[in-house]
Length: 456
Image (cartoon, rainbow, N blue to C red; front, side, top):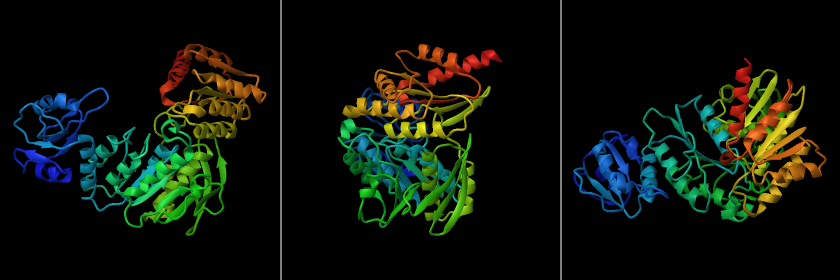
């Protein structure tokens, strides 16, 4: 990264004091991670105000400051704006414009991280590809990812998350995607968006920053996305059910640790094998394959790339130990993703019992009780045992019991849940762990693995 103080001030519509020709080599918002030559942007958060750490950032080597408040007198240039959070996005948009490379923007209620990783995997078959890491999918993380662009990159894949209207629009304008992807319209963030129609409206904001006639890839199986009409961009559909999809996955064969299927599209047919299980993973892979084809990746190379895909931490990672299969999927949960995980559990080859360990789904607002009850009813048809944890998880048990599942129990603490699970687990069993990240269900996994280690 190379940009001058003068260029930055122009990009963020600000003014500056000090030397305008000083070059900046990186951008930082955390004074503890300042590198010599960086621009320190003082962001005001819910708990901390970066302006309090401006002097510390300079002492650590920051070459310039970007602020919207007065800061202690400094020997480095200070760029002033009305809002540093807005300036962060503006600077990212300007910096992204320096790179004539394809950028893919990925959003959706569920599946966006898996899809993002798969798209990056496919594009890497042709281009050195930058992608969003971890949870850097918000109005802080996406700009910081954009600043990671260097001349050696030939493509970028940027994940876009949101909790309210306007956020995807701002992210898209910063990313300026050449291709947009919407994975699915679920019910997450109903508290702020009001309805699935509201969620669809918020996700379609990805169009706001997309270039010219950049295509939009949408899930052709999703009932809400089926209502999308003329949006001023080519609409291309992917899926596993709708025969009208432009990229359609068929002949799905699921094994214990991988899934093989055929993708049919205008250019022909391609067999694909992914090291992941579940129809939802097939749908995500189909979106990634489509993105690759649209951006010039050969179909066979796209398939080979997907064969090497590796799931991110705690996202449907399959572990086999002592004859027991564990499906780790503790990163997040919504009604759609729980349904998909239960379907995966049912399809998984199993010589013993199928056990679903489910934790609360968060941020569902007024539909929370109904959603948990419905997922519990689904569990009754996909699992032999249901172990539920969390304040709302009792509704899982109620829904399962109403459908006739006798082995369904609710727990208020993870220790009791772990002990019960250990007492019923036997060789040949398959156990699914699924919950919202805030439930920290991985602590039960940790207990399980520690007990197994002691047996060795």
